[in-house]
Image 1 (cartoon, rainbow, N blue to C red):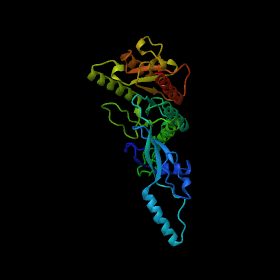
Image 2: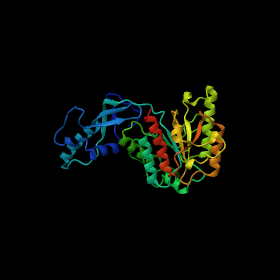
Image 3: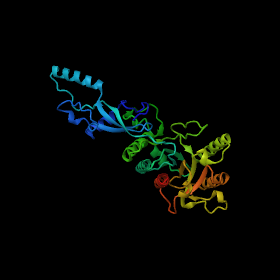
Image 4: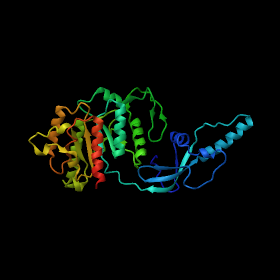
Length: 353
């Protein structure tokens, strides 16, 4: 549900045309009211569960919009006077009235972030978004790296001038823009995240965006992805700024988010610097409340990126480092598999507490 209206008892939420179409034609809501008008106020009929990511889950009663009821009544009268039959297949305008709170909202701040290189297969990228959503990811941020393929960027970007894009939050399609430029298709990825959130009954939808919420960092252009090198520098600069102001180097007490860099086959573990060595992901997750995972492209990290990771981990090494290299096992994993395993490891550690 749109979160501009807080969910409270008695709150009326206007449903989008797509939501109304799904409820009436797929879920068959209000279909039993053909013969007579039902004024049953029980919560067992024509009810749905809704959430907005901030105020928990609510049981809501679905009604036909008052405006459309008046319009339909006058329309039927005119049709009968003119000798025409009224329209029957028109989509209803519906509102949901909050009646009973079923679950309260838990904190969303501790959910992990996943920074990933786009995948050239859209179907595999869809699976990655769905499974990470089901496992509890909080934010999905695509980034670019040295070995990213052009086809992978083409799978993420689409031209708004050629086709309309789906508005994932409010439903309906946005009209194409006049300019011919390419922007990331975050709307379609959010649609996959919404469906997965409904399936697993979580009370929030992960952000799919190219913006990195760090202090002092401006929002990216909608058609620009952050490079891994620039991201890592911004991440470390933000950590230094926070700890310089607080005077506290203990990440566990300052509640700072730690970046876990996923390295295939424990690459980098043979370095002589203990601080730069790769740690098993489950071991790295112990004692860390808030983490972010950085997952490489299908071609793996480049030599320059590997050296940059080793140098950064060596510089900030220690139990309370803002950056840590981790291993997801001895096998070389596909990019989407690595994302799912990383978030799954977090889910196992989080649920075991």
